[in-house]
Length: 483
Image (cartoon, rainbow, N blue to C red; front, side, top):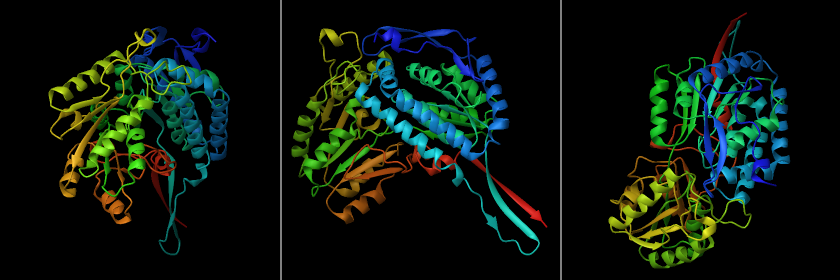
């Protein structure tokens, strides 16, 4: 099938159960792997946002009163439609965001699993009764907020757009999903496929840039705003939301550490270090373990093993099912990553692998970077301290445990961390010392549903992919009854 026939027919804004031409106009989307113009995409203005929010607010009036079982049925039907179009949705993302189609099919699977998970929890949003003595009944109930805006990132466009609407809708809210400006096409196709399953106005999609996002934050009929994105964007949203005391949930960046102890199973640790970098996604993953701390006694062995392991990842066209590593999402991000690679050289780290565009006619017009490994890295270097969001691994040597943990925890980030060791006491000690919201022992970079995912410090303030996410879309009301 040609690319033109595969891509969504609608490129407008979807709200109130219908497609609407944007007052904000259109902007072209480009394939990161070929440079090909994929056509115009809607750009929502403040006026567009206002119209969509009012439609979602009107839908909320009845959706909040819809029986939980009926809301669950809607979500399960959405998941089933997605399963039926699994490869198609994955291929659209491969074309639009640059990640390999084989991995993106797993993204669709994850999204449908999470949708089904939240559909199964609709009856668990329970309150409680509080003893008050004879003649009185006191109880709590959980109620939805209203219109919830969810702004998602470009590294998993379909997975984030589909899965992150589920908890809000299950809890009785209506949602406005803002897909990534770099890769909105799969969100349009999703709405084409599920159009009519939910009542008009329950699920809405607005594509656009900063104006669209800011208008959602500012709108008085949007009581809750969430973001998957950078710390800088999260801070901007929090500042804007503070003006209206909105509820804000943030899943932000990471500069995650993976620590290898001298007693670790080194073969397992090396595989974990390579897999933890998420090279398939070009390192464009908030949970990537981009700082590898290796004990000096096993440092050379681990470095050698990692350098051999990264050879599996070769940049290629993301639409090819054999591709093991895709493209960087945009020219802007590509240039940023290459700048950090040059900084690493200038600061004295040793470039042990990669660091270049792979070359070749087939990849010439795409934003491709080889898997990149720096050794002899120290924590005063910017490549060890700042989130690159690219295929760049920094390997650091440690000898003193206290000093190592001081370095691991020295950053503003606190999303995730991991440790490889064969000693149970070491594993527990390390897990307790990591200042991070998600910790792996003898594993790296994987998510395990329904384990709550989220960060400490400036890496976020909420937990997702779990019952905690569902609860976060409700507010608690107390009812005191005198008999």
